[in-house]
Image (cartoon, rainbow, N blue to C red; front, side):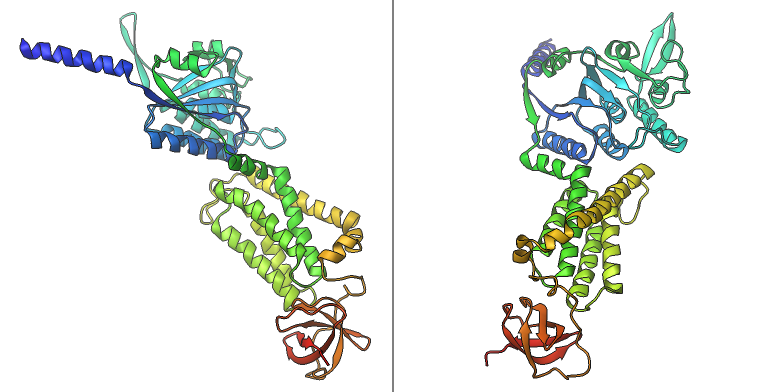
Length: 459
């Protein structure tokens, strides 16, 4: 009897402790298109949850959908989470948002919110072929099934049913699926909060996060909000397709103007900074792989060799440009070690469109502003040529050592590449590392590959 009394007291104390313990709830938002930035936010949120050993994670959602690859990544993160995950749909959980919501343990919706319409479409809103829909149906079905089954006693019979009907999940993708009293054939399934409660795809209505927690019986808790930092916002800004296109144009403009005025100067610096801003967000989002960035660097090196070592415009420069463009395209699509199994035609088409429109913008920019820029005072301060005469292609070193010992005038600044005039002929030259000002007298001392080596003529 004594031991029984002690057991009762212990159980009572445990119960009291459970009711008074301050639970840790980590909350973050998905209130944007489902894209790499959303995936990064989810990883950040669950990272914080693991760090503080959170009891619950709650997602505040309002999205019209986005990329399937990122939605699937977020879905897997939620399904593998060690703690319960609650989603509060504040207005919209469409398409990819519906998939993510189905992965959560509990779903709450605000009055007037909707969930569903998960058909896979392209950038123009056109429905993609059935192979994409079939894959989406299987993911939706598997996600609904992952929550298990309920045992229901009805009229003395034991019924076992899924907690979330997989057929309804599929109907959110395929208009051909008809479910009596739920959705008619010919209509993609989407539900209001009241309808979602009726079909057990929603656990209740709420107007706020605090009300959601109250309905879950969580009254004593510490709410830990994970928000976007300034760096997160900057990365999201740089990841916008329009900004990516502008950065690509700056990369090509920088390379073009550097080709026109040999020497390491402002154009190449601008191209390098643009490349850094282009690749950094993609690398952090897991899109740009090391080999793709290496491909870009190799392409850039070949272009530099064309500028500094091999005068004119030939195979080396063309190969460098092809490698550069290829790396820019591939870095926009998801792959791991040349495995493109997670890349669909929509993502690849989007990458191609971004790069193609950037190239078109590059050409249009050259037509409209190129000549004016090259003749502007700003250009003459930033690049190595003061006149169109100085920008013409110089004569490469040839004919043995016939010019060794001859003197001339620097027609451009030599740092270390540039041009000199000997008589009426202009030659491509480079110094031994020193900077030689335009107009200085120079003397040819030797020949190296396609360049004459010159030094300042102090005589």
